Image (tube, rainbow, N blue to C red; front, side, top):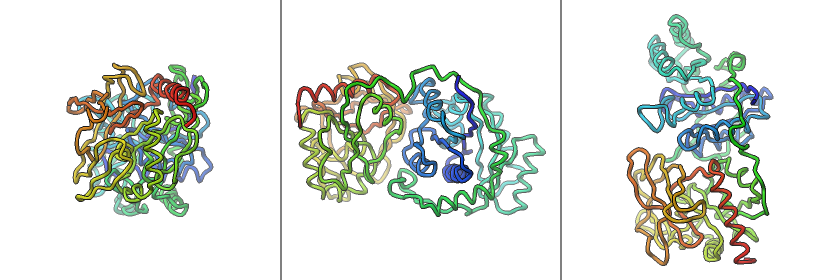
Length: 468
């Protein structure tokens, strides 16, 4: 049986109430007290986990109950919290918002119920007094599987306002008010069209982390929070350990990592390493060539549109990637990686040349092109499985292909991609030989067979092609 770990899920009544900043502040304050804090983020988010990783000094893992099965999430939580003193989970959107308007599917509430984690509800208290109690009562009684441990009133106006809020909750029998944070108490964090500016680009200084911790210590009842939070022990033997597998003969995988490429699920890396995969991180922005003796390359998502000119100017790296793509070794590129492998990126009528292996260009749009969960079903054998295999993931991008690459120079579509919200199905996942590019971000760590196949393909192509 897994042991108990004190934990809390920071949820909001809606998006924009400050739960991301509050989560960072609580982690900073707990670490200041000498605690080892393991962080998690609900949903398919790459940005908040980067900042939580920075402040906690431990990898922050995504808990996505739509993409991953319950057994995997329980095992991931058990593995990641095995040596920590406290676990903090940052929610997504509003507490009950997820992939469905009629169930808990994909919501923070579903994760809280699945892992038996108490919820600290963050509310924007501006302009409220007794109405806070009515609002909290609705959240508190909405689903019996979800338990509120307390309420945090953000953007509080004054000491008197805080007293009114506390009295309203107490007299109506609602969960305890565990903190009131004044308006503009937190330092401002930069944002961009996908959310906060990433941790790779905006390194939180020690001074800013101290400021966040100060706000939490001054305005949140941390001692009370620590005393009352806990969860029931669960059997963590439902699946094999996320970080333990049979490692075979080693292969070397190049992973693009810099300001332009940084969107990866953190549990992917240990899942690859325990399969005997040696990760070689490199920068398409700053390095002039790929690492030596690679058996495959993985280009994740990120912000290639922001750094397109610099990526284009690094001609030696572009040539190295093009040659590698032609070598027969596996190359996987998703979202930003797809843009990088394309002919180039059109922005304001100008084409910025890139690798050019994918025989079409991409272009930036003024509005978001896609956002939501997707299921990718293979229509042909590919890097991660045979025809008929299905994988879950999500899309989030502001760009599109300028034309269809299918049928050009041997390129084909190997995904039947279904959007969860609309039910729309279309061909995607562009493949030629051992190169696969897609806008879909797949959660591969929760698909052991997919990673086993990917590593096996790198090994087999190494034996076929020999030294590169």
